[in-house]
Image (tube, rainbow, N blue to C red; front, side, top):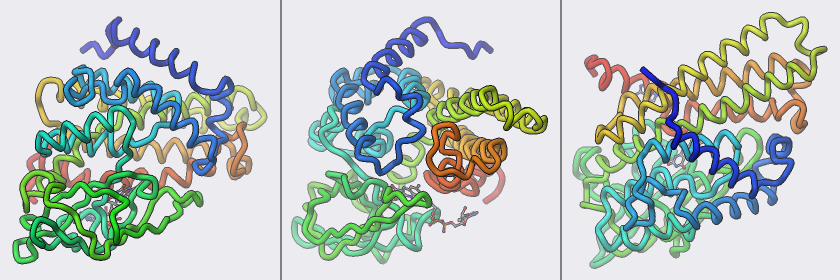
Length: 386
Ligand SMILES: Cc1cc2nc3c(=O)[nH]c(=O)nc-3n(C[C@H](O)[C@H](O)[C@H](O)COP(=O)(O)OP(=O)(O)OC[C@H]3O[C@@H](n4cnc5c(N)ncnc54)[C@H](O)[C@@H]3O)c2cc1C
């Protein structure tokens, strides 16, 4: 099998790289390893990158033209994600672009699709995903936040947790229980929720590096019109399960991994006093490089299957599992290689090894834990009994 890209695909990658390098600061390759998540300069840069790319509908290029896309292939979208992640270019509204937009496209009514999708494509609105609760993460179907019908409205009460970027989102996609008497998978619904609705309060949660990237979101009698219901009432579980599969392929994970391994190789060359005596670390870097290349091909298979009209569930789980565990292995190799220098928090020569090591811990939790991916591979891939 030939895994290489076609001439057109390579040309697209080159054009996009040139375009991004023109927007990113000149010394981006150095700087990107030292800008902290909560640095206002990073936010400003994310805004300008997102706005610029949205002008040519590049954020959503696989979406139909009618909804703000270019009608391109999923492969081309994956290539876009690859370039963005390889360059470490910051982007806004990942949840809106990768999960919520495709959910709206699949389950929204025409009015919802025509209104919300072009606004995501044009970088007008930011979204957050409001699924997890303090006692419902992997077992999402057990969620307790509930919406009670009240005439033409629903009234939402409850609490969500770990909601990335909810503090800056215009809208949330919230999973709620609408029928408390049905079995746990059968009484759920999804609502589009304006985040400035009365009764919503948001409390930031700092991640392991001290950056407030996640949030608790509380609902106290939040009134939402029935027009904001997504699809059919009480069919929310099936929508949630499908939406979680949308971007599990995670090509970007491998692109970031490539960038990080290349940085480790660069460090090894430029700091021979650190690495010369460490034969085993050289071998470790070589192992990571091999794993990276194997994983990249696992991830590329997903858009190819999607372009054939297939729904890659266990294939996406394999790629997610392998990629997130590779992220942790690379972080660990980096820390070992740099020894005591790896513990320095912010130092371009150490490419933020310590904060990368800490943030890598979340990679096997977010977007579905490794155990959940293994369950999917076992049952849906290998047909093992539940
Ligand atoms: C960085 C980050 C960003 C996130 N962003 C969002 C967001 O924007 N919106 C959102 O809604 N959520 C978000 N989450 C939450 C995330 O989806 C959950 O943390 C994740 O699904 C795990 O749920 P949990 O934390 O409740 O752990 P639990 O589900 O309680 O899991 C605890 C442990 O038990 C294991 N386990 C659970 N069930 C099984 C099983 N059936 N078989 C085997 N092992 C099992 C798990 O693998 C894990 O090791 C985010 C999480 C992180 C870390």
